Length: 298
Length: 184
Image (cartoon, rainbow over all chains, first blue to last red; front, top):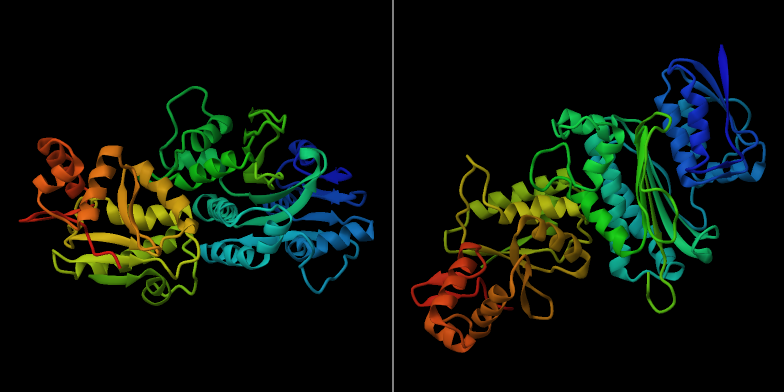
């Protein structure tokens, strides 16, 4: 039997959970149709998580693209369909675009499989993003460098820990729901790999406790800076990134398995740790860096 | 003093066509090449690692290159023979990651900045920093002269200098303690 998974009209980090709730009832090898026909909006998280979903299915899923031409054109420009075609059976036509460059996109959807891909995204961001980070977010060069470092470290998480290829996308936009429409830069990194819990278990780095699970694994990695590698310097990347995000009054969330942990700034009301969520393999990281306020306060 | 151009090591010795030091594997490849060059130096030679041609460095690379070059070699690995390492061409673009990993490991390093000044970067206390500043300001002299210049007790200053020497932040000679290298 084929199950239809309905994509909400607005596909973002919150509404993607509705997709996962529908999927939770289906075995991994079940035939599914992902129906995005009535989707009118997709965030970087929504698009990269959807590709991750396609990777994670044992049975190739069918994908019905948005009917709205503007929406599917935007998704094409972000690079979504170029990669979705390799992961889904796409039914219906999708717009062909010559270039994935567009306005305030800092980095279109980019596959990450090896260290060379990390170099590629860092060099691309350095070339493409400086203008937007300077003029829209008004970040001084040191803060821009921190942004690139955060990008590098979060993307490396795929190479060092996931065991499977993943995706990155970065975008700048005016955050109208929060921060009174201030410009922010967002990085999303998604993979369908082994996730934080299994990574720590593989390195024999799990703490001895009855509480062990995805939530505690995320806490162990993000808050205590523990990596699956026992060397003293490992785990520095995520720790340093956390420090940069904290100094910039930014937001970091990591979802892995059945839990999500967050470094939550005062302008957001998300819970710091959420457990017992629908299972989704791998890790999904989201970073939001607010631009400067007048007067230089982040 | 031997100068090692880290940008050139990245592109030529490690054969990686980039100008940014990112990813742990890149850092490990570059460090191994630098270690080979350092191993070939005489015991009293100070090396300058020049980062002028490096765009940015992330936390992983800073840990893999800077911290591991300053840490004692792992058990079984050959001991470091050269007299010390100075860092040159370090900018704000590198400092955030470097300071983070140095503090994590409790390490410090000598940086010669483009403006001609030298500074200790990393995990050092006020005592170590002030005595180190005196060593650099004098260009190196006897412990007694350094204590006089600092206006401090000789035994205290001796203790701090020994600590700085054991951390490879100053050179020890028959005449006293000296900076690792000459400011250019």
